[in-house]
Image (cartoon, rainbow, N blue to C red; front, side):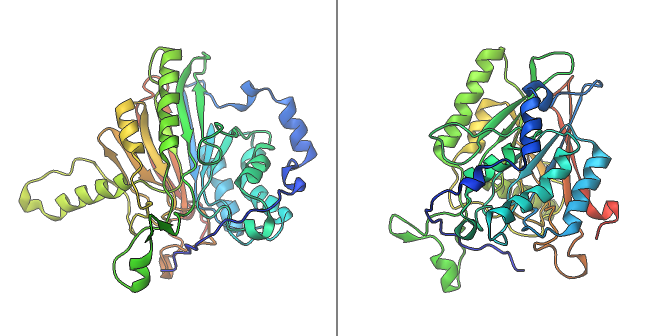
Length: 375
């Protein structure tokens, strides 16, 4: 399978002023006319919150029309209160700043024109075009933030990554936060060498395998912990939440393997305890190091689920010691899928339902392009 994982070496360059311009003057004006209360998500009148996750749209300015059709179909069918894009929105196909703007507009305009609050996290491919377009994540984030219904923030100063943020979701009849959403930049690629050792040497020589993707850094974990503690002090309780980013954690593999082994050996009399459901069609691709984010979330007790993309043909979810760990299969039609006649079968989006009366309980499922007749 062609995994389309290309090593990207960042280059330094002058930022183009055009990159910092809004998507359109009309959009900028509309955003300016909307106060924050009208842009932020809330629970609806029935006390329900619905979130849709799109991931790995991974295309350029000539976005595959099936990808856009899928986004529109899911939005019209599910009518979410919040949309989260979890990285690899773009590829190297964009050559100019205008290409980048067009590629972005193709996937986010369907959300914005429906006046649905939305945000993005970045993946490992989002800067693949940077050497040619001159636009890095910070520039792209400015473009995303120029849309009226985008709720991204620049992120805390001095913390690794672009756009790390926490979004509070208010109740329908109250301004008190009932739920929260975390978005974290999980990075791009690991350095080629660390302490004189080459990360991908084994793979190059034809034996073994060493992951070369990035990992969430210690300062990001500390930022999450400090922010979580601050929210608890301010509101007198822990705020239940979902956390979204692109590259999976090592715990995903541990959880899946644990349940799979017990299912494969019923003679041992061991009961799979994580309730894993869904498909795993490729190995998990985390970074080379476990940075401790899961342990931090477990200790804090506010994160009820961690959801990622990155591995296009995985969509499983399980409960790992009280925290849901799950994938959304990819949403983009221009990238690798299952291959063969079933290549596009898994493409889709993940839907989350949260009840205001019990916000610590999150229900989730996949919807697929084939459900909407898109193949």
